[in-house]
Length: 97
Picture 1 (cartoon, rainbow, N blue to C red):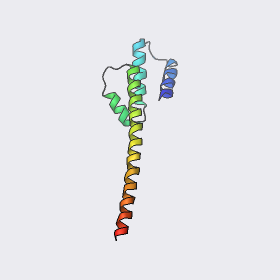
Picture 2: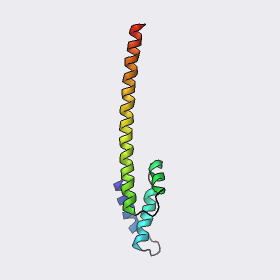
Picture 3: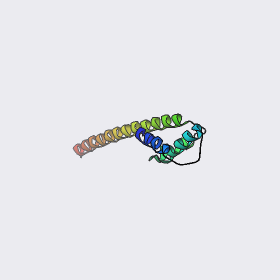
């Protein structure tokens, strides 16, 4: 995500748009950053925020990305645990049959 942001900033320097203030420039980068995110969930959460700075948006996106990664690991671990439990139940059931 950080590399994506750096590329946006680099590309925005070469744009031949009308003169804009530094704040407008950062706002345009923020909007492009949000629009280009691959995660629909993170994009939607960021769009719910009003009047955020570019840095606040990036920080929140990184936080949400980290939370999403943690959730995937926890979900995977839980599914593995449930699979093992199911195997043990099936073994127990087959011994009683």
